[in-house]
Length: 320
Image 1 (tube, one colour):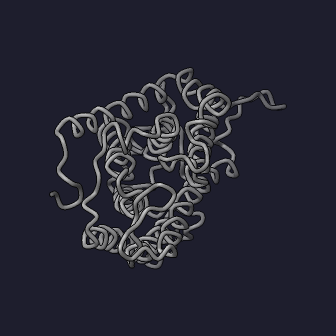
Image 2 (tube, rainbow, N blue to C red):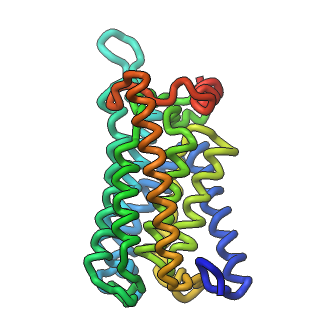
Image 3 (cartoon, rainbow, N blue to C red):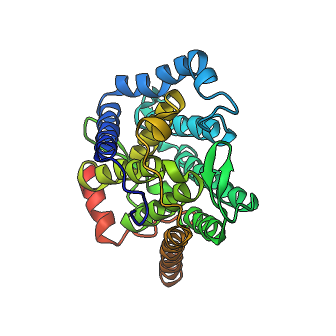
């Protein structure tokens, strides 16, 4: 027995690695080739919605993919991908004969934080909902094993703090290289790590026996590119890898339960510790951000909070 996950067949962890690298590879394809992005996040979902998902993700199916949460999460992730592509590539010639870009409009820059906040809020609601089930000894709900406890409340609060610390969206830029990535300089490592800890705790709490994939692998699939491939584009990486994974799950719902299962230990202590780390990291982030806002007399709705940090400066330098 492991601490977080039960020790399983080595082949399952090999499959886990394959999933991680496949997500990163398809994310890169969608990032560097606009035609691939349109195919992956527009054409394929339309075909799947018509011909596949009504069967594989039907309400009440034995693998739990037919819940409201899966359907909402699928289309909200896809909306993020397509919205970010619009920010990157949509342009037009105005009456003044000049070329205008969508990302130049301040109202358009409100879309990334809005879709991000909505996605976090969906998960926060689910954590509170799992607590309301009252499964203090664990049980199966909607064909997924879960256990209710204080960890749901702790992590729900962590998610709310994560929403409140989203900042600096009016500083979003489009990179000057050929890939034209959506860069958010004020979304520095501190927020990303706090998000990762919160989101992993959410998957561990609410999709427990699927969390090795939809939590651990999926978060690494967007965090690794953020630090080592294209810095500053975390939200773009996150939206694309999330959409890729959830489309796969909607299509092959038996994957995490039958084909390559990596179940958790179902140990209440593990749930508590994971959610405690998520809560403490987000409290620390909120306190640090509030300190910076007060001492620098910043407006968190308009100003960039971390513009004087090295992390911010490196991202700006690489993409302007």
